[in-house]
Image (cartoon, one colour):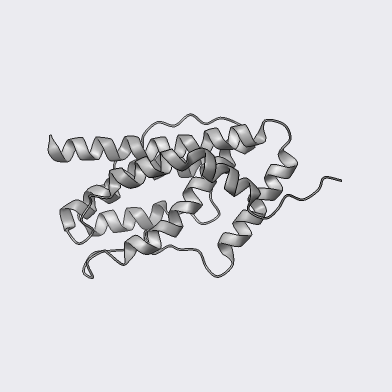
Length: 179
């Protein structure tokens, strides 16, 4: 019987492996004025391009794409086409994608407070319920413990792919806004 890893051990390994990716994405989206309808629309559009590619592959238990589509529609915009994402048939890769998506829900709570009161926030307000983040960490660690050799490498590649997609979407949206 395999020894259960310390709760959060896989998450910590993923966090360490994606720190630079995370900083890059945060910096890219930091200049969005969440109280400006145009800037907020660009922010949501970029997220929709990434999330539209990620959720079908990651298969989160709580999909946020419908909430994001609702917010974008409330702002009078159509959903953009998702960016392309390689669907690697590895469970580790899928868990890496999930790690990035679930982690983004933590940041969404902080960002939702900065959104103007008359703007929709269903997507950013879809935060973890009590105990859900810890439960996700337990599931992540269990999957990693059972995943075998190469699982963590695949998970890191998945998490990095998710961050890269958000970065690509944010860069494209920024170029369109300044183009």
